[in-house]
Length: 164
Image (cartoon, rainbow, N blue to C red; front, side, top):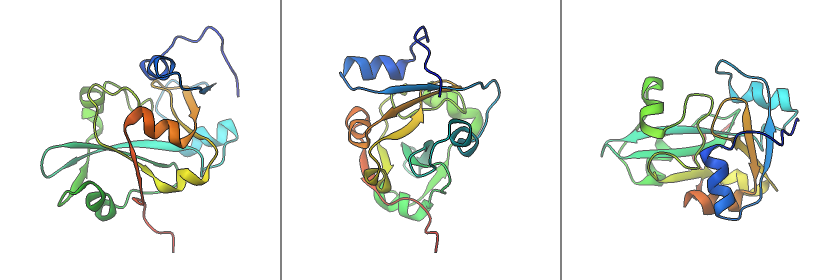
């Protein structure tokens, strides 16, 4: 893990600073998109504490954000029930920047263009801290699950596919 003192702050970092929420910054070399498992491996992080941000759209056309461990899959039925939608679809990759303001591989639930309903996988509560994207490729932010929920107005729910 390298800490850069002169790192340009992302919108997510500025929001955390304004909310007086402490965070750790981790950086890694990354030009093209790499998946969260590879990021966790590069940084020596446990998969259970490293989270990815997924954006969906409901039948109502409302967007929803789900924050789940990098090695898990979103269970669309559980996710739909959690947010009260009949069904959800993943946001197409080509629409990520337009909807969130972030690029694929740098999408964080903190500070999207608009505040979307956010659900954090409840297993996050078993972790002292969680790692999420910092708002651009090559940057990660580590915060407590409670602070993540507070800054995103997020709720906790079981939205991942069972492993059994």
